[in-house]
Length: 76
Image 1: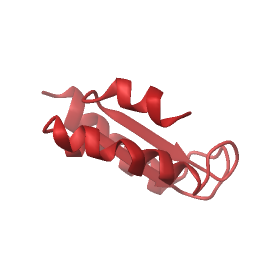
Image 2: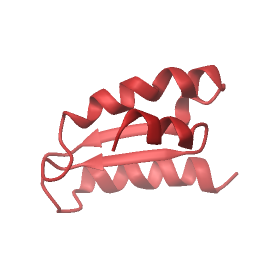
Image 3: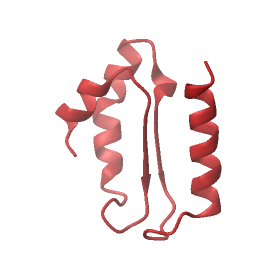
Image 4: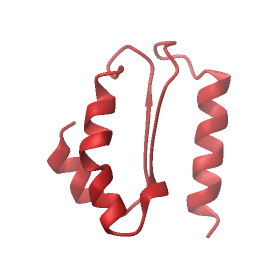
């Protein structure tokens, strides 16, 4: 993942669920790098990141964030 590829996705909804395996707290830098693009396009809530720190498990916290994000962006 890099800033260029994430920026191309803007303003489409983008959710990154990290678990300290392939994605960890370092992924936050990529989200922060493209956040201004989302804000410029008037879609600051279309990008979301959560590190639940539980590797590949689908943690209840991650599930709740994912469901809320998907509800917000798919039920329009």
